Length: 400
Image (cartoon, rainbow, N blue to C red; front, side, top):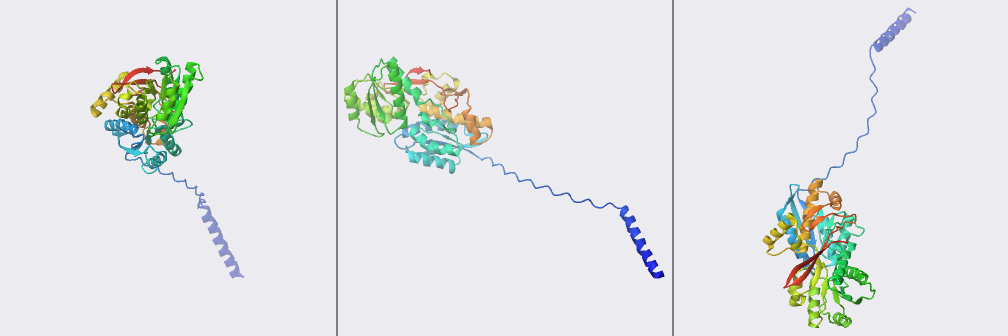
């Protein structure tokens, strides 16, 4: 019995000792639940070592003259400004070959393979429309020098520095009525080119309005780009005895048409659009194009600013000739992109596009430019006449 009491006492002593020890110690705090890991931030895209700009033009084919004029302006702008944001610029020249299918393909290569931040060009509305369907989808800003309204209509990534065909058509109709005293007109359009078809319709609408005569267009005939024989069209037009003949096509076709018209004894004044401003008009047409009248976007005689005058001097030194409107527009396009990249301080196509579409009172060599909500500028038109084998400045027509 004594042993049982001793054992019980021993157990009690141990329990009391354990309790006393427990009162002198704090139990370890329960671990906090782990916070969920933050998702890793995607790495910022590395800034490119060089800035790539596409010059997308018809360097070969039926419209190659336009591409050549543009290249002169781009080359000079690049030579004067080979770096943007401290980075070297690489201009990638892409030939759309004056072909609508190749226009889309060459645009895709500029975007997917060459990784350009912007595309300058192109000359020719049909080509521009074919290519910009690609650039628009990719979100790459484009600055074309094509004038058909469809080039910018409903587009978000197109900014244009030249006026549109509706204005050009109105200008030439007004000039024909006011300056040439025309009461009737004939139109000979290139049915294969959006530029020509659109310009023909805008001229027709304005001419009938100004003459207050729905029948003042006495002949409306067509041909296709590259046609060599205009006898049928000219024979019909001659029979209608119009006061003026409007030919809204490209320079090579206009020159051939003028030669054949004069050979057929047609002395009626011939007027055209801005696509007549190319050396081949005189090279092909010779004396037959004397007196032809057309609109343009730039004239040396109309240049007033120091910036424009410097451009003219630099161009003359480099090329030994006066600048044409397409070289001037291309020069402006390159410098506008450069200025806007310097403004946003990042090589980002979407931000660049926003900056381009927000342009206000930017001084270019072709004039002071503000872009409206449709991506188009409001600018005057220049009138030229062929005299002595040269394009002679006649007038400046302000928007109305």
